[in-house]
Length: 549
Image (tube, rainbow, N blue to C red; front, side):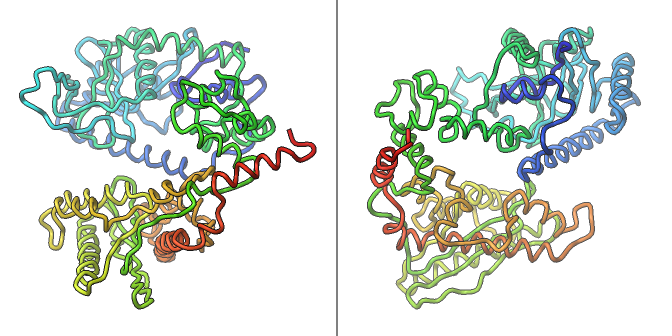
């Protein structure tokens, strides 16, 4: 085959996917395109984010002479985009947006950069990503050892030490910058050995020192090119990216057929087990001693393997199942749209002292996010929740509010208090933090983790069906709800009121699923879900059957 030419995406992630992508005789992607809604939503969100950043930067440079900030037409054919980028470089443009570099066939590189920025000596690549690349830190003026990171303002390439931030390094971002730098270098266009990343917050350019990473990049490119050329053999192993990989339909049957251990433990653990001779689920199920380098609970890993063999979806860690209960219980579920805000807080109040379940109550704004109307809906939710809590207390009743996986709810509780401070009814950050830290705010996801092992994951839609709950919408899910929201508020299209109803039903079902799961945990779970010891006995009994290995 011809010498493979790799893009930055080919430099990280699954090596077996790379080998399959470049397999001889393949002209198209396998089977069918990726349809996973989470993957599709991430792609769309990243595209929209890049567009917003480009428009922002163009406005920042709108008062500068023509040719300072050049935008390459990203809808044009690739050849035209390459020529436009070359022309902008020759003309000395200071900023080039949506640049496409000329393919370096000999070195096996192709790539594009959201920005090329002239640093006075040449061009540095600046990429735009849809995740956070830095985070604020508290600066101690007496800490003389703190060096900070290097950042540059959005309006110019002026790298300087910034002690108010800490970097959040991402290997994929680094590899892409290194790849682009080498391409610029080969074309005689490179500036200093630096690159930049504009992240989700769009508050600065995080400057990356590429020089110490270049040897590692060169080695990685050489290995990856050999894999693409089929000179290094690879085999499938389940990793995080399998979920959205078009090759999963081919790899999964092979993994199941050989009962690969990666089906029940994660990638880092797979390597440790493999290095110690444990390659199959059966070998793991029979193991009685953890390898010295194993990180995590080896007992849990063995149980996962035995669950896979005995087809057991959920296991009790202990004889008893413990979950926090209260006289008055409120189930809460929040819906957000990317990073733009939280548009819906759904609630369900149950008074167990009188056996009363109130109707589902949503607090919602249908104005497209971001909008200050979000402050109104959040304030109404908070005031209602605190009124329910105070009413229960005044009657001598215990109170608890529940969510499933509190990270998202906590983020938007705090974020809403911060963003809308001073608006009518908005609580202080201190009040929000105090509520989150109290025993009246309960994460059922954490309770599931304390009480059970779930071989196929602990997501609400994995666990609640075991408790007997079913969602009304078969397509219900976080990523699908993003599409529904676009239709519901008319982002780029006409408003579809049926999608508002769909979102409310989806949110209500999540709220009710949390309630059903909690009550099941406090009741039937202890008698219907096997313990770890039960699964172990099932496994050993099954192993004794004729024909079982």
